[in-house]
Length: 277
Image (cartoon, rainbow, N blue to C red; front, top):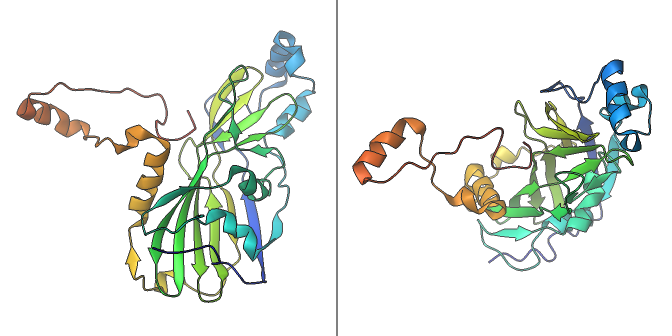
């Protein structure tokens, strides 16, 4: 069992840089309506659109709150477990404490996720998993669900998830490497605005530390699981169905015949195992 209660003791500051690319693609282009589309939408719900067309276009490409920000080493204690853990263990992360990191992107960051304006907010949480340990280092993988409220009219961006990684120098009590990023795929964020929703793609949205000079690939781990295994554990902590062993479609019919069991099929419009459509 590993005790992380005093794992971070360095007094050095940690500089984190932020990147946030504009939306590169979307199904309905809700983030860049034409003047005519905007005027029609505003006529239908003026109470939700107290802005001009140019303001609406700017909403979906906000400037970073802090392109560079210095954190104390102890700020990263929020990602560490409150009790002893083994490699492969998963724990909850304090939602209020992680907002200091998410608000480096935008001050409207929140962990209270609303799927639509009429539903009660729910917190989908944040979790971490100890992936690897050695006498001198530890690696933790992260998964955080959050959204960004871009203005008072509840224009919101809902990322699929933020995946992350934190490497600690246990001997020095310091942060070696930290990253928190939106996984890159063809649809990785929902746009919710003006009583409509859209599926969009942001190529890069990431927080990361500047290079420490140490290549973490050179670390010899004493005990470890693969990153894939760690991320599956995190996914299963969010979604119980992630524990199901899904069968490739090309193998299903043969397996059903062999086991004399029915086929249960799901047809999805979008992703099932994150917070995007």
